[in-house]
Image 1 (cartoon, rainbow, N blue to C red):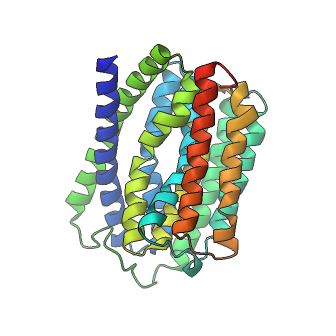
Image 2: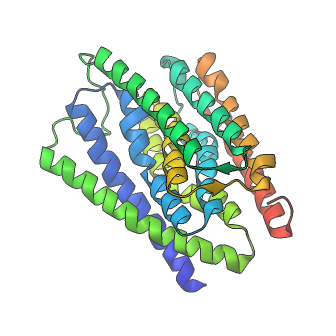
Length: 320
């Protein structure tokens, strides 16, 4: 048990550190190319910070733990919307009223509905994975088109990356990040599965809670820093982009590699919590309301309630 806990902690630390390296290199790359900060948040930062989820889910699926793989994605999306936005809002107001994310939010909502529909087929298999990857290609194409349209826009005024970083440093940060993420993901999955079995929790519950929070640490770091520097476009774009990437790329890639049966408890509860959390962002996106301290508290309390219900039923042998 002690060794497994050490593995989990070591995996989390590696994911956090490697995610920071990957984000730093990725943002510097984007800034060197002159991409606006909202596009940076929706693509480079979002995809970079979602790399832990990708590696954890693929490793879990290949290791015969499909519940952990699927739970990691669904749980990470819930964490992103309720914690990754809620916690930074306690530190500094996220001025979402100053940016327009309606288009990207609509894509995230559509991706959530699509995944729920595919999940009710019982198994997210290879053809479903190809559908998700095809949708991701369309979304990426749309973002590339937007980036080209804003190619000559004024560079983003933030300190999240160095627009003059040497190319060898950029490549080095990205490579170190990916290597660290691979090792950290392997340690985290091994330790989490072992602890789940000892504690009597299902792999799905562990994926929805511990692993989901652990792999979302890079998003948390990025969003807190962005909020403190009043970069709402990076903070909100990071969450929306990460959720799209989780649903389309991670589930799609994992399903193509190893089909994932969908647990009944996820069909009854967790997928709907994910959809509800997605809809909870609608007022901030469409009514252009800032995410202040009060809203942050409500979002965090929503996640606490979800976790309590999940662990209660998981420990008592109920729906989870």
